[in-house]
Length: 364
Picture 1 (cartoon, one colour):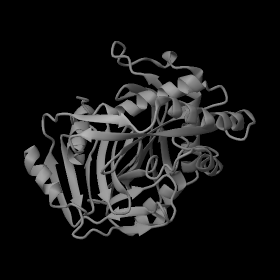
Picture 2: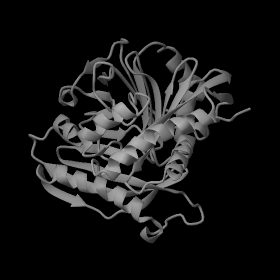
Picture 3: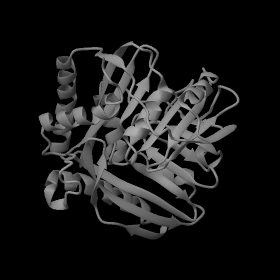
Picture 4: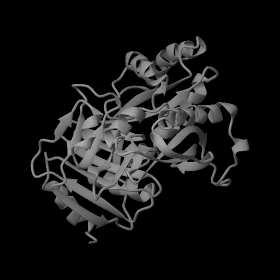
């Protein structure tokens, strides 16, 4: 079906306070709506629970009592055609604090990360930041933001979910964590960042710095180490540049098969979080970042997507995120750090990544 924007918004209006998700796969011309008949989603404190359910899954960066894994039951599933146009919201977003305080807070987190890297404690760390904004003027309408993101970022996975446990989130992410089924799985190594140059739509690898190439290789090596012992077949492609809004990343596509004993939940436990969003070694890096970053990531750098719908999964890392509240929005971004990282260049990288969400608004 091809609903008008007003019709689709009315659909969501009927679900106020309910549990639902919208998602659009990369390069798709339609999107899917999933909703429960009641508001209370199923939750779990382990990714292994993914083996027991079908529907839509929302997982955090770190699973815990405050941020459990959330499953949206597919009581209602609709596939809808994306509108050909979607206007940006005319909303004035005012930073909740001054730019100087944001920059200072980033530096206070960057320094211990760099010291830990240079001491040899970690091979890589991914430092994130959160930027809080106060909207004024028109009310935020999450569905309009979702449709605008679908229009603006056709090659990325776009999702909006709302549950009483997680709150309301929007993501437009370039990174796949796991897709497919027992017949064959796909994942990817995605890391390294450059400004996207429209005059050089496909820059070759010689244009990428040694730091970016190394950062991406750390993720590829991790995935190979995790999958080689369990895969009956493993195919690792070559790194190539891909666009993600205003930046480009290096991506290596990976395909594999494994025995049925390696269920979806077991694979997720083995892969998440990858060094693309955490660091290496990952468990120690995750603990370090939770103590070092001044904010909780919550569902940023987790993953979401359809789970066992029609026998398939399509789970994407929750990057380029925005957490939407009634009176505030929280935008998240991060970047990979190595021992030779420069604080100013890493700060600028997070600024560019934040634009993915901020550019959905048209400031009056």
